[in-house]
Image (cartoon, rainbow, N blue to C red; front, side, top):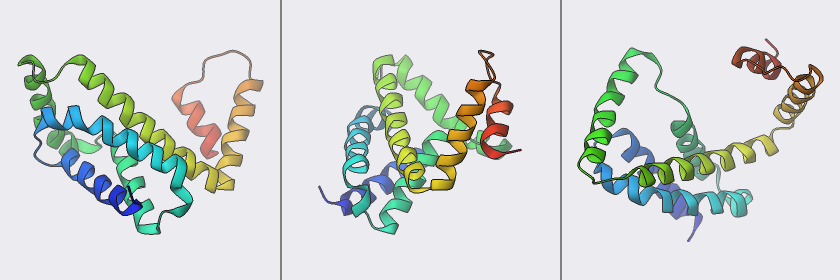
Length: 153
C-alpha cells in the first residue's frame, strides 16, 4: 500500500474514533489497520510527506490522550455506553477490545518512537530523566517526578 493510503486510513480511523460509530465493526477491524500502519511507520517513516506524518501523529495522540475537561468527557460518554452495550449483547468480546487496545497502543508507541528519534533534544531529556531516575535508587517514581525529570519542572 502507498503512503497515501495510510493518510486516508489515519483520517478515517480518527473520524471513526470521534464520530458516530458502527462500534462492533470498528473494534474488530481497526486492529488490522493499526498493525498495517505501525508497520508502515516503522519501515517507511522517512518517505512519508509532512501531511501524512501530521495525520498519523494526530491519530496517535488522539489514541493516547484522555478526554480533558468536562465537555470532552461528556462527549466520550455515549461511546462508552455504546461499547458497554455492544459487549453486553455479545457483538464484541473482551478479546476484541484487548486486541484493539494493544494494536492501537503499539501503533502510537511506534509513532512516538519515530518522533523521539527525530528530536535530539527530546532524546537527550529522556536519557537524562532515565539516568536521574536510575541514580535515585529503587524507589518507585510518581507521575509528578517523571514529568519533572523529563520536562525540567
